[in-house]
Length: 538
Image (cartoon, rainbow, N blue to C red; front, side):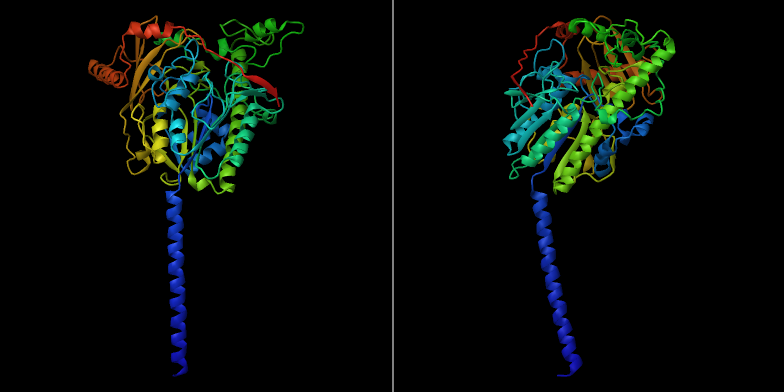
């Protein structure tokens, strides 16, 4: 055989061996990909309390550009930012119960924070469904539903201050048994550390579903000391509607949540005079809740006083947000460092929206956009392309069905919400043409009239019904700040069309009782049953 022939045969042999190796390597790689695709998805559902979408920099507001949230934004960068997510009842406990059950407030039974009783933990919730399907489940942080969490293998939730928890010296109940009093760490840091500990010590043979929930940035906005230096070198711009006079909006004019008139001394971090009893100190700090006039000094009055209150409020609020953002970053880093990022759905949201001075307000409750709209960012490596934005119209009752659907688990028929998984799988059009809202609580705390309403892509129609009978209609295209109620001048055909849609939603969601029945729901008093278990100092 000639030398060059031998060389050609040798080269061919090497080529075949390499090709075979590459083929086998490709098969192994395909097997690995297939294995990962079939592995159950983990879920981390992160929820802050009262975190306005305007204070998440992924949404691009003026405020958030001055106080960015880079870690929360990572979820949107690696997944999706959703721009049309709405709360069905904008108040803490009722929103949480709707998220857990996938049902509206009047169906799950928890429709008021005050005098509405406690959450019925015997009913079906999405954590119970995950648990039944082999997931290890946990809730860490704020719960605020009164009864002991059910459907969780592990729970450690805030229980002091009526279940609100406190920023400092918070008390946590573990598995419904013992209370641990945290004496060293800020509540946000304690919740962050507990979450990481649970992830480190979980059963790694099971997929997990974790609710990671913060008190921050709820009133009275007390940040961790590590953030006290933030925002000291500048003031935040006033919102465009800061000086709203509520013309043409009777319900709004009766409010008790104005920054200029209803922030109290506790909110503004004032210190009671020495020598007062604890009871008198609490009264002194609460002064201002009902509109009582006060100022930290005689020279600060009028617009200057209102401006000072706004800057004090917004800076402390955003310092609390900075703590949440850092805590979110810690968990995202943990997922990446432990090879879990590509197999874990991560959600970031709030229990509802919040006012950051818009209309001159703080708090929530209204169907106006700032409290109605929720921030919602979601990362799912299998189905959501990085950097996605979605205008799919979604309600908080849709969260539970969607998480179950994404995990490949059958959605219980009793859930009223709908999965929006399809919004990320080619069907990016808005599946809903409208969303429904109903708020019941009155007059505590902020004298917001009970109301229900419908929002379409362009219009919003609301009916205030408790001690007034007022309709409001807004064209969100021409009036996105909802400053001009056009109900009295709108075309009758438009009003008829919106009322027809509203009645259809009320019937669909089984909320079509009479006005008198709805008023009775507001008047009903069901005392909360609240027991603190044995206290342990840690």
